[in-house]
Image 1 (cartoon, rainbow, N blue to C red):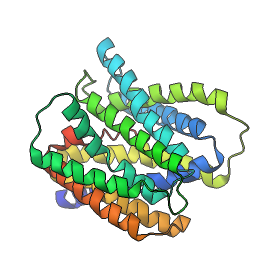
Image 2: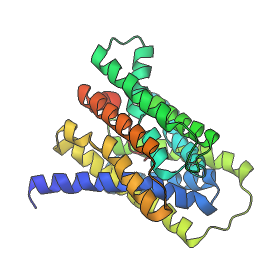
Image 3: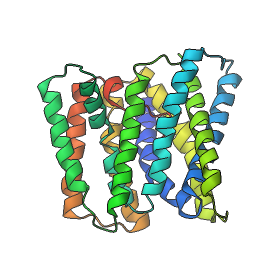
Length: 294
């Protein structure tokens, strides 16, 4: 296989897998308590990724400062995923994916709040993007107001973790960092879930979705993404940010029978175009979320 073919194979993997995680979250959380499902998912994925690091001859030893950073980011990023599990019980898959797609816009807002000087074109793109979010944040098609609000909270947590990760001391190995983040986030949510868990009777579809999220969503997708960062142009890699919602919407229509309304289409176009403009204007590392916990 040529290098170009490998790049497109890896990129297609990220497109499909990370775009499909929204549907996986819906099915996994359908009969499993959301916090229990997401906590066990990340603990399992974190242990598997740590095992891969050791199997490849790597080390899990990190500094105290790096460990503190992983703890903070682990609470924010996996925690954002836990919040999304709850949201998707009351928000269509496609709508949830579009709201989460606004994460690069929120990251720019956080950068602005830290008194970083940004070009007006970038800020204009963010403003346009939030118009699209406002269009989407209207209860319709089975979506409830509080569910949409939780989606926005998830996006804010994701943005906060992404913003913080570029400003604190992190392990040099991305796989090691992600292992710690998933384990910390998973353990915190598992403790909380013990107080909210009422019964345990998962359906086969929920179990299959949970396994998919652990193996493909957290391991295969992240491996492909990490390989792309080292072997493909950043501009090409960043395209997942606005392709994933398209995949999520398509799968939502096919498997959940979700309706694609004119409001959803209008909001989708505005958000996706704005995110594309913002991502292309700035280096992906500055605007895109850390994706090891997807």
